[in-house]
Image 1: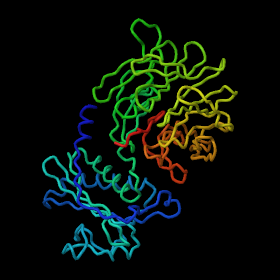
Image 2 (image 1 turned 120 degrees about the horizontal axis):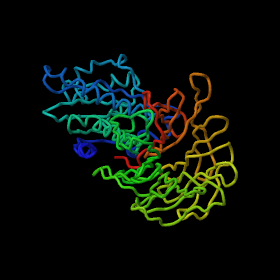
Image 3 (image 1 turned 30 degrees about the vertical axis):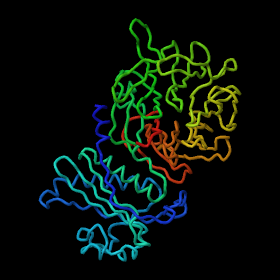
Image 4 (image 1 turned 180 degrees about the vertical axis):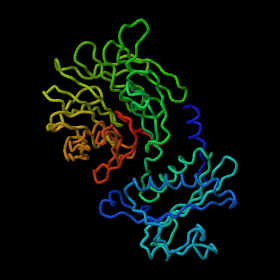
Length: 460
């Protein structure tokens, strides 16, 4: 199944049409959406095939439209203009402006309703292939920002839509979006008594179970290239009396699964080194857990933390530039610490709260997100890598009025969002927030529980 998925993801072709940008290439400055969102108009996508087949393929057009609309809305840069406000019948006007196109649209019709940007798109289906033709316009200047055609199997419609949404953000902000990224997570979807590992698109679509141990599988982590997943599972080995928390490594393309750390005790909390050649993990063999560095074939390279005696050193998180963050109770309460990759230069960077855990680096290494307990619940916080500038991202209540817990943060590959779990609905569901905490959205919407989601570091 995973082989087929990876083959499909490589099957989308992109054909540039033409583009025209401002002199500096930027239409929206990063962070500008905090004060004013750009008004976006995006009429329903036209179908270019025979009218008699329009109803047959309507679902494909709806899927393309809804996926793009959700992506761009989540980006926090845009507010969509209600289609009831449109002054033109967009089903009867072309995708390009008049007078260049005889039945083209008029920019005046869109500037009159305050649109900053206009997306006109249409699609056709021949055999098993869908082609999406898109034009993104900057209305105030009446110019084309981005024009592209996308072609691929009908089954790849969502990927085509995500690709276009990424391209729009790149054209307008200079920075690509995270919409082709994926998430790996532990969940009880296979039954309430077990937890398995799942891979899904960032928006929870295309969810696929990738482990089947019928046990407790937790704490998954992506390799930097997105081709491997390390995770811990309580596997009962042949001849053993008890299940042990062993670490496994899954190659997604081949489906090959290998047991890489099965030392008696805990082998958990994987975080790959930036070059993908090593794994940092927590090992506890009947004593207090410490962080170790290990090769992908299970050989220990070195012990990274060393006590002090009785202290817990857990939850290693490696930044893309090779810095380590972890949780430790060496000073009494669990707090967040940073260190060099070899364990030197240890610094404590959180001092408040009862219990701070699950540190996660932003892609640029400038910020750390973590889960902090102040009363009886946990919330997500983001701070600079030195512990300054801390802000709270979450605060939510359960239906019974008690405060919900929000845990296990993970940054998006573009660094603009933080993903985490929250039990505010009674189940552990996945949410995302902008990194400044101004907008929050729910990602999963079902009756299962999700644990420790990790956003892939690679965009696609």
